Image (tube, rainbow, N blue to C red):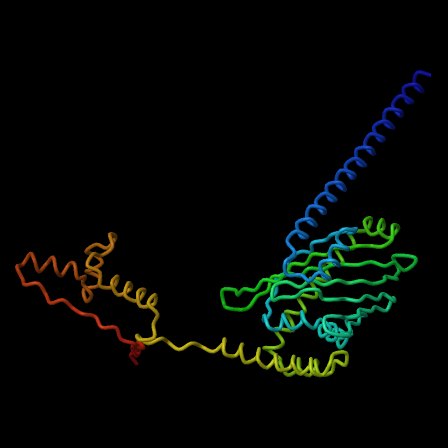
Length: 353
């Protein structure tokens, strides 16, 4: 009986420890969820505050406020940096159906995107997902779009409706070699018009966010590839564009003309620059050249130069040593030497046969 009692005490103690561990895990997960929700709300408020409200039309403001005030989720996608010509980038922002058309040509997507009028597109997927996308505001650095549609797919038993406000910000720069770069940031305000679907979206938010992040990375990378093809293989790129039946002919012609401009621009940028003459040098280049001449004919040699240096190089004595020797021997001061800058190409000595 004593053994049985002791065993029961041990089992009871172990059971109590396991229950406490489970409670700690649940509390930790609850705390993490609360922190994530707080961070999401803070980021959403910051993004909402920094929208260009003074430049938006009343209709655009109304749409944005309607979605954000009832937003179920907010997601800031990871920043993407690509090498792309700014003109190519702006063109595909105005005509995203061109990118989807390239994907269709390559057999890499089940999406279809069609422009039905200026700044309005219709997005369809094979799973009967349909959305209308309206561009509310667009400048060279920011694009705001509103999408409203219906989702019907394997994740949910029936169709649900929702709305999204996406804000794309772009910054343009060049790397140390002069190649054009674009830095892209994307924010998404998501409203789901169903309580059950809203709960499922929050439950699987991490998975949904990863899919969105991956799609954003793939899309921006493809834009960089299109820009690269415009300079390296323009003929093939124009041929592919001409085979896309989903875009208007005038859009295709405009894109082909753009490819020609990019090709010519890159060719000019890659041409070797001729050496500047004395008259063509900038003031900074002249100053740097003068400083190098002053060092070469300096009246004060560096401190680590001793007589051994001059003995090793008797053919190039320093001006300071020459002046000092002249004073000691009572010789007259040598004439000042003027150095006139010339443009020349040094000739290497011929090797003895």
